[in-house]
Image 1 (cartoon, helix red, strand yellow):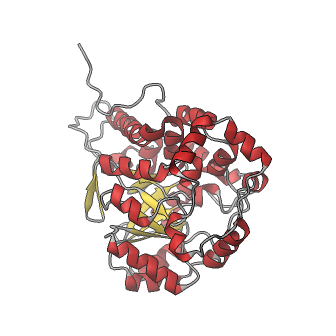
Image 2 (cartoon, helix red, strand yellow):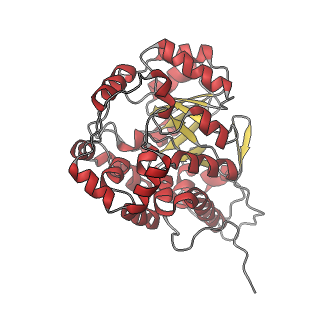
Length: 387
């Protein structure tokens, strides 16, 4: 008798740990360090993952339950699973063509993909390959002119959701990037060249797809910028914090769903609600901005337990999720949707063009099994299983 696999994926890589191990072998060290690293001593990076272990769930084995439905409504669309792919800068550096691989996989599997302003594919290209389904994360420019032009480009491709990043008033002090030369401006030193040489598939695909660049920002750059000038451009274009007045200006312009990413406190949550934001992604930027802060999951728990916010906007989470069990834990403590970044980059790093589909199905299979074990029919029942 054959058993039908509901969510097929490569059985050699049944976990994020397996994908990470393979990706580390295929991606040059300097690029993998950029993906993997946090700021300062990387304490908050570790907290992001470890703090999930304190959340325990209880089964109800004798409870009568029906079919499992993992789909969820979010901003007027019904997604097939309650998770999506987080925005990550310089994706094409870590694995060539990664933004397109992931955007295509997300559209195919009906989950959201968020393109970063500083990723390596353009707004227009990702809108095309995702059939108009990709969200966009805005690094707020210092000039309103540039902000408005980016928003007009998003309107032109009918971007469904705009995410404004608010937690980068300054770039984090990341020791791994400083050592490898992946600061601004980036540098290819002898060590980095040697690291690339021992990853031949990465090198061949990089030649095939071209040297990665900030594709969305190309229209605003002078032609022929050298590396030092590129660094000056980035610092000039994106230096400065996002305050509530800047978000209000975007709210006045952008009529579609507006989400703020990087919210961790009640004060910022209440300010977002006051100006009519549609959702927040609770996040500490993957542990890459402040080492003395708390994990994303602890911020989420505080916000959902101490504030009456759920009927006012969507509360989502990004940071530290590494399994379907972690997904279940996050829903149990109040998240309404979850995003993951590094696991999907491990997926494409390990499996190339198949990595996006594999990682989506892997998480679906893991979450499905958790729901079976807890006797749940939909994700909204997870809070009833919190121990």
